[in-house]
Image (cartoon, rainbow, N blue to C red; front, side):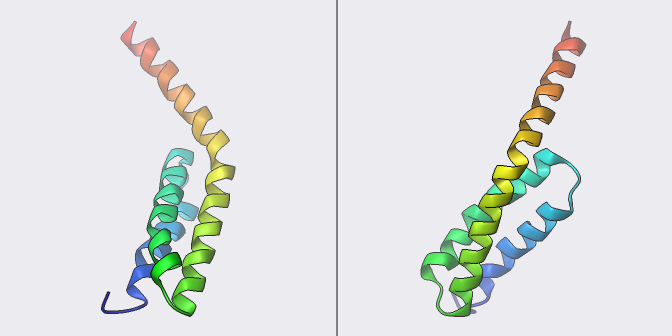
Length: 87
């Protein structure tokens, strides 16, 4: 990586977008993606980049866990509506 801060830009953007979206499914998926992309700076970064990566990783996992029940509920409603339409 040429720029040390470049590794935390994508996870930061994904995290902030995940906080702003209204759909629980989109929020959950964005938090999972944040966690995936925050792994790299958490383990390979140095100094502040590593600290930011670890913070994003922890926060995204915590928000993913909190969004999961809403995500499952929305998915169940979506499946039920799909079944009603197909019948």
